[in-house]
Image 1 (cartoon, rainbow, N blue to C red):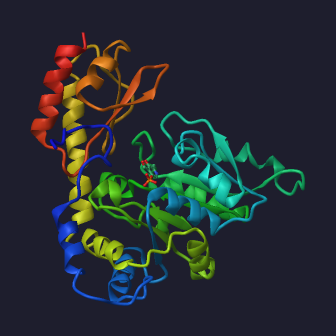
Image 2 (tube, protein in one colour):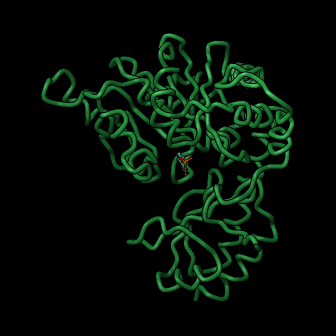
Length: 343
Ligand SMILES: Cc1ncc(COP(=O)(O)O)c(C=O)c1O
């Protein structure tokens, strides 16, 4: 079967060869199951090297699970979680957060996926009111669903506000690596150093096969999390195959190289798209997502060759994503094709 290069998502590409090698390297007999193995311990140590000695990594199967059970670990069912209306937890997780935490999601509008303390404050008047779900977590996405990047200061402001109000700051870091390289290459700066309490650390969009990590930065918060993960059906028996992938991703700067390359390809794609006058960029390109509006009638024509997601039907905005595996010639081929069909 022929695989077609496409720009629908950073999920559509394959697995980085170093990751596959790492998985094969642990496929050499038996070891203890359920994360008690030496590879999982080493992966946790790698996370500590990046995030400090208090960081504790819990592996799960996918990004939705990381968000859902991470948030479950911070809340009771009478709580609410404040997030942007376009947050993945609100728009693309089939109410899994609501179902498994029992919490209400309180959403605030956003142009690029970022939210501010002023917006959060608007949801806080219910605090202490027994008739209302109680705000307990602010959840942000770094980089956002529209590819925007929070600065460390913006995150610290949200974290300080959360903590002052006896709340937590959760980060969906499905694309944290892309944001980190945009900000100079530190994974710590917009996470633990900025006051994030729990992080969903993404790997799948950055070259691994599957598996994500829920990272707690405070041991008091993670005390019972192993039970939450098991109840949430996210305890992998053969965990070493997830752990091996993270060991490789966090070694030799692989996470950084992959994200840097993906971001660079997004910039190249942006530059080339500007050659087509009917295509308008709708968002700043800060990471590996390129958002453009395109005449509506052209979308079915594009879909004949390339699978793409329409991000906003009303504005005819589509999303194009690059990854560690995007080839320059694939971008050129896309542009040649778009020049023919977007008129
Ligand atoms: C911002 C964001 N968070 C989380 C996820 C995780 O999703 P999945 O459950 O598909 O791994 C995604 C995937 O598209 C995402 O874009």
